[in-house]
Image (cartoon, rainbow, N blue to C red):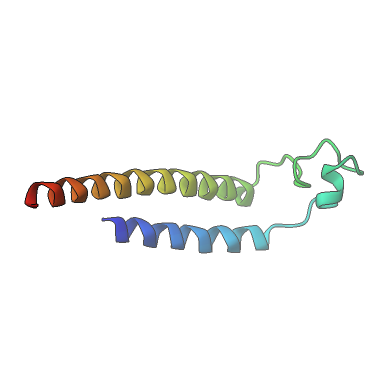
Length: 89
């Protein structure tokens, strides 16, 4: 199960990279974040609701959720393994 989640995280990361790369540049980049021309924009991206931006947010949120779930499952399996080792000894 952990392997499947790891593969999902890798696929999600690849898709997120591709989606970010195909976005149109909508601002001055990092310069606009620090008070440049588009200081009202977050990280240089205009506040539009187009499909690519929604996809970017969806992939980012799913990456966060998958990472949390995987971390919990790894911790639980490590605890189960240590419990099993202590009962065998």
